[in-house]
Length: 182
Image (cartoon, rainbow, N blue to C red; front, side):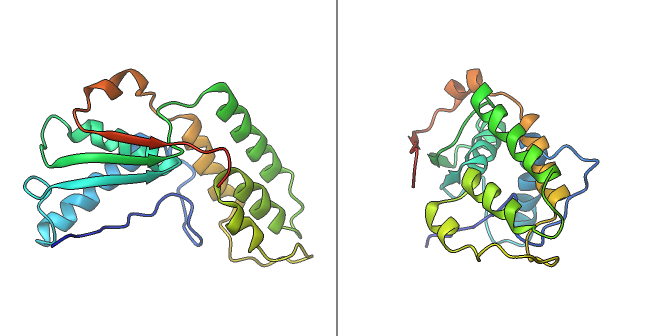
């Protein structure tokens, strides 16, 4: 049978981060290594024998590709990678967008945390997600990530390891889908 494992990081609601840790692709690669090791210890998967593929979205595509690079010499089970709006390094346009996002987080009125949701979603989510956000209103409570946690995610993204030149060492098919919108 086929097993599908959804590993949904970073930036999900109610996720807390240690702001002293650099939360970049190296950090997430280590987290994913531990996760796979745990699944192998519980006999849920055998990543050395079971053929598998990887699908990654946005920052998750960066993390997936970086993890794949770390296992490509030791595992022949990886059969392919599918990415959506992925990247292998942070270019000047992405760096500028991230900096603007962090600036908006720092200057958001404390009684309107939903502004952060809108700005964050414009940069990281689909138009459907943005359309379903609640209307902006004066509120001091929110179910969203704390601003400091979102800032930690973006600071980590600015520190991603650039692996652009190493991508050619992956000997599996990579399908990369990029879209400006949706």
